[in-house]
Image (tube, rainbow, N blue to C red; front, side, top):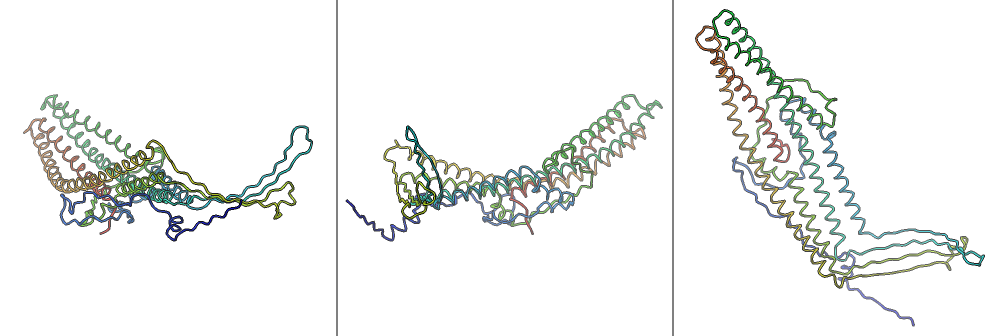
Length: 462
């Protein structure tokens, strides 16, 4: 008995079959705390998303040609940046793979066999050529959710690449500042050692003349030995900074050296109104938001398991025992097929998976909001430090200049026999500490500027 069945599809049902219907929740960017102004600065505008804007070579703000050359090569040679770039390329390949699942799969196959057995001496030949295709229509939007999720994941990887690049550049600039700080400290200690040597000679002459006690000479020797030990400490610190810079540049420490050079004390001023605009440019915030989008699409993928799956297949080919007549019309073979499947009972496994994806999305939302809060705190911290260090530098300079005058006066009075050598030692220690404190606050101002630039997501232009 032959039966004919006609299936009529309404336009709505046809569109549903072709385009599918999304079963996942509509994605909305999570809300987060976003103050209108920063507590530590006035005149700052409200934040606006701009994470796709290009970051400039912000390290040029420090006006150091050597630093400019080093920082520019980080992106090319740093291995952490290379790792992030490879992960981004991998994420983009995953997007292409997921997008391919939306289209039919077409395959071509061919075979030839010869078989026989038993007492039958005759063998049979069988040749076959087929071209076939299969397609799973994305009725419930599961495949499209996978594509969208992969795209969001790739965008998160791009943000993580930007974060790795910014982190490596910031670390290099901070290490370079530390290295130049040790160069200046070494110069100060060299001058200090020369001064201590002169004072020790004066003390030795006075001891030989019977004017001063031996304790004065011993104190002078102690001062000189301590200063020389400090010289070695600074040399060791400089070597550590140099090695760290080499690694950031993708080089072995033995293959890299950086000669001493003048320290450029430029500290870039933060233009008002820019930080709040750049806050949303932080790559870690962009990556956290894209992770929320991925988690949201996973809910749709899990929900699709509630509905039946449909698969379509078709093939056409030829089969024959002789190669010569293989492609005759009488040897043609064809097939059409459709299959569907629906879970009837799974003891609530689908419900559990959906709840897992919802909880995972809530967790990524919490992480996103925490990232935003931490970003605002970072900016506030660096703004407060910037203002305080600017004031401290003036005070440290005043203290250093006064301590230098006291040191010279005490040495002159000691030569005249007006004060004990203990007063000279105290003045010398105070003067040296004041000089080094001034250098430290100058370095802190620059490293704080680096940290502020990083907390804002990159450089800026006036």
